[in-house]
Amino acid sequence: MPLKHIRLELARTPDHPQGSAVHGYEFVAPLAADGHLDAEEWKAHKPQCTVRRFWRGAADENGHLVHTRGRKWAFSYAAGEDDDEPIFKFDRHRFVEGEYLSVTEHDGVTRPFRIVRVRRASAPTQTRDTRYPPPPCPPPQGGRGKKDRRVAYQLHLSPPLCGGGGGLGRGGGAA
Image 1 (tube, rainbow, N blue to C red):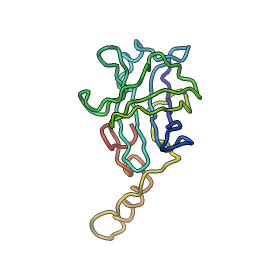
Image 2: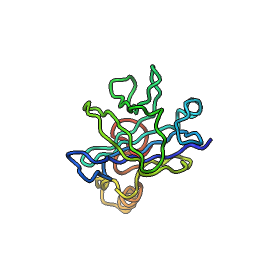
Image 3: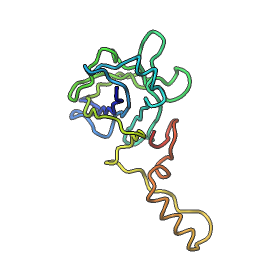
Image 4: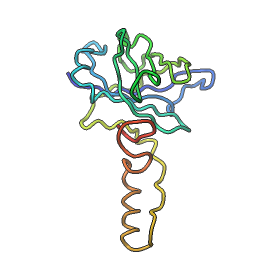
């Protein structure tokens, strides 16, 4: 069963009456043929089931899709359950473009999200949306020799190094 790369964007809310493409989540999960999450396949692919929360004006948050006690699904960004963002009836949703679901975020507010993309996940999984490039890198420290200019040029061309770096954890780069 292939893993799927799923993008959720904020649906209509009082603050965003038209919804928002710059507020949402991208995550990787195993889906059954009918579009539902497959918990057994998730167990076999836990490390690949990553999530990236993107929110204009805030650093990206990277973590994992977790299946908690009580058979509930959540997005988790650190060890423990304090930061988990539960997803309402996640196991009952069909992940089909155009459908809606709700996520209870860190601030305790449950917000609606629209499924805008479901695609086969590529390996390695890259969840950064290239439509929104990372911020520019700071200038290199040190002298002004030829080597320093070359390093600065390489840094500006390398999204995993610019815009938060790689790896998992709050504020990290692509998962």
